[in-house]
Length: 379
Ligand SMILES: Cc1cc2nc3c(=O)[nH]c(=O)nc-3n(C[C@H](O)[C@H](O)[C@H](O)COP(=O)(O)OP(=O)(O)OC[C@H]3O[C@@H](n4cnc5c(N)ncnc54)[C@H](O)[C@@H]3O)c2cc1C
Image 1 (cartoon, rainbow, N blue to C red):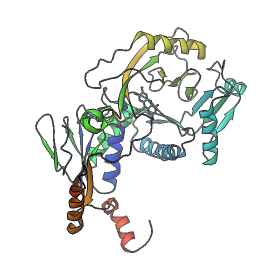
Image 2 (cartoon, rainbow, N blue to C red; image 1 turned 30 degrees about the horizontal axis):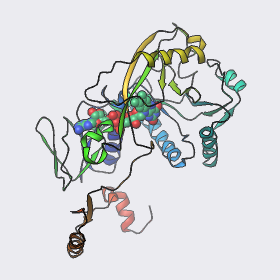
Image 3 (cartoon, helix red, strand yellow; image 1 turned 60 degrees about the horizontal axis):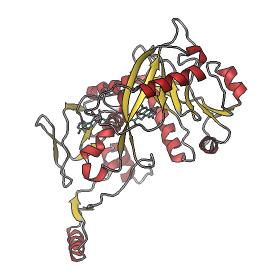
Image 4 (cartoon, helix red, strand yellow; image 1 turned 30 degrees about the vertical axis):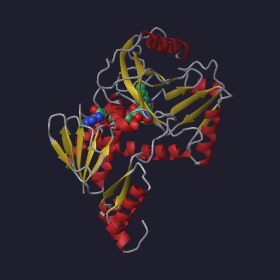
C-alpha cells in the first residue's frame, strides 16, 4: 500500500512514521517543509501534559505520546535532547473545576500526580510567586518537546527509512475516488490512500466542509532572556506551567532560547499563508506584566524572541470526527448491494452521492498482525 501524507508537521510526520513502521510505502508532501515557521509545529517548544479535565481519553492519548517522545529523543537526539522531562505545574484557584476534574481523572487512571499547597510550590519552585494561587498539581513525568527540532529530526529519519519527501503545495482534491494529487508546481503525486495533516490550512484545503468548523486564530508567544549564567530557569530546575487564573502558560529556558510565555486565549482570525508574524503590543505587554508578577526575578527581562502561530480549533476544542455531509462511501466488494443502495438513494431523492471504494483492513499493512490474525491469535 502506498500512502500519501500531506503536511509534515507533528501530525503528518508521526503518521508517516507509524505507516512506515507497519510497512507502507509513504510519500510525505509539504508546501514549506517540515516544522517550517508558518506551521504550528515550527515553534521551539510544546508542552506535553496528561491532564485534560474530565476527558480521560485525551489523558490516555497523551500518556501514549509521552512514551513515543521519550523513545524518539533516545533514538534521534544529537548533542541536545528532544524531550525534556521538566514536569508540568498547574497553578489554580481553589474553585477551578477543570483542575479538580483533572486531579480526579489522573488519579482514576493511575497517572503520576503530586498535589502541592502554595507553600510547597514556593519551596519546590521558588521562581514562582504564588499570589492568587490556592492549589497546584504537578505532573512530574510530563514535560516539553523541542518541537521544531524533533519534527525536523523525525522527517530526516523518515527519509533515511525510505519515505519519499515532496516539496509543494497540494491543491484541493476532488472528493471522489482520489488516485493522485496535484501540487502547485504541477507534479502529480499518486497513491492508494491519502492523509491530510494540514493543521491550520485544513479549512482552505477542504473549504466546503471545514471552513466554518476549524478556525485558525492568531497566537503570540514571547521568549524572555534570563540573566547571564543563571540556571534557575532551565528545564532541569523550572517546570513547564499553566497558570489558570492568569490564562498564561509557558516553558522553561530550553536550548538557551529563554523562558517562553504564551497567552492561552484565542486571538483574532489568522491566515497561515499570508499574514505577517509580527506580535501585537498588547500581547507583549501582557506577557511582560505576567512575568514581572509571577516570576519576579525576571521582571524587566528583555524579549529575545517572539513567535506568532495559528491555533486550529474546532468549536469545542475537541478533535473533529465526522461524516462527510454530501458523500457516502461503500465497499465495492458486493456490486449488487452497491447498485441497490444507489437506486434507493436516487428513488428517495436524498442529496447524497454514493462513492464506491476498495476497502482494505488497515492491519493488512502489518505482516506480523496479519500472521497472528491468520493463525487466529488475538492481537
Ligand atoms: C502558540 C501555540 C502554542 C501551542 N502550545 C501547545 C502545547 O504546549 N502543547 C501542545 O500539545 N500543543 C500546543 N499547540 C498546538 C500544536 O502546536 C498543534 O496542535 C500542532 O503543532 C499541529 O500540528 P499539525 O501537524 O497538525 O500542523 P502544522 O504543524 O501546522 O503542520 C501542517 C503542515 O501542513 C503543511 N500544509 C498545509 N497545507 C498544505 C498543502 N495544501 N499542501 C502541502 N502542505 C500543506 C504546512 O506547510 C505545514 O507544514 C500550540 C499551538 C500554538 C499556535
